[in-house]
Length: 455
Image 1 (cartoon, rainbow, N blue to C red):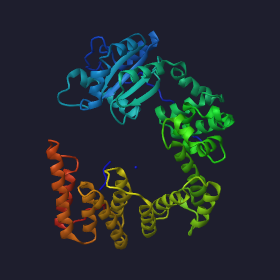
Image 2: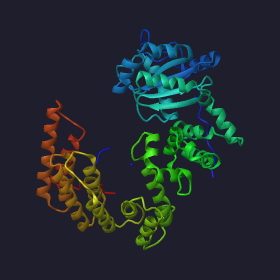
Image 3: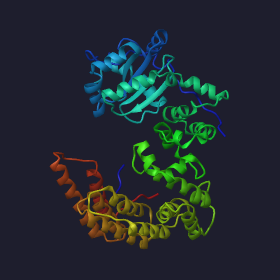
Image 4: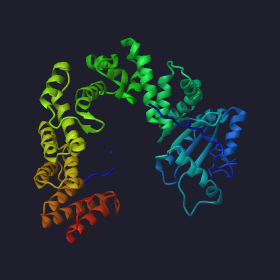
């Protein structure tokens, strides 16, 4: 069981100060000595005031049920230093994204503005922290809780001329200007504007026209590596980044602050150039019978430092699942990966990803009984390593059921229900996210109805 997979043009994303121009202000109580949230103006008036006074705008889009949002109120917005940083340079406003019967009239009048924000700025979670320049243009977007120190850094970053004037840089780019600002611009377009196609184009320009001419010392910096982290598809075995990651992985990991980062970049670049580009075109296979041995030999000769066999097996699993669907071949290479894995009963996610995940995939989408029996063995092995994991038990029960072992499946699903109830009871809870799912699955088994997707 699994539970939560040539540019035509673009629109420059601005705050659109006409949003909510007839609404009142949100009902947020200011915190003494902390951030003073604006309550007397509409969004349109806030934008106008910011423009007239040369102030930035900070908007906290939150939900009443959101725990991290409440922590921001308690720990960050109440902080005197945060309040001092905010007061002179920003106009702050809180925007409630959800609604309830308890909302007062002031909150209700902001409903249209809140919905416009959710749509326009693609709000995916809470709190979403939005920063606008004095012209009302969105210049940064952050998701999730930030402590007082990190939040102050965000305030400073928003005021940085390079960030505050990011839209002017974008306009310059469209008029043919190509300089070192393209790196920051590409990150902004990807992260804040959400325009991946444009971001990739700018990033490519930046890499080809600037980064590829840099020395190893110039490339081996945190900001350069952070850029590549966002646009790792640009790395090829012919450039300096690849050479650094391949020959000096420890040095790169230290500069990036992430162990294994360099090796991951190398592996991804090798897979792209030696496997994806060789065997796939426009999402479809090129050869009816790929020569895997030749590909393996080529990787081993060109890149002896990488684990060529492991890269190939992972690619073959994805290839026979998503490109040239072949469940038997998929199961064969999944089994190769499992055989090469050192799985332990240590409670880590390795067992989930290596055994339970493919077993659940086969249960949901495969009708080949031979493959399902192989998947059942994977599921049984996962239970040997973690016999009380309710997701593993549920996967096992569903596979038994799809293989026609109905009475065993019902009994196994009941085990999942009972174990889950014990877990919830110890946590002081009566119901959890799997409760209804497990009961529904058991009832379908009793009724002899499919428990897997029908499409």
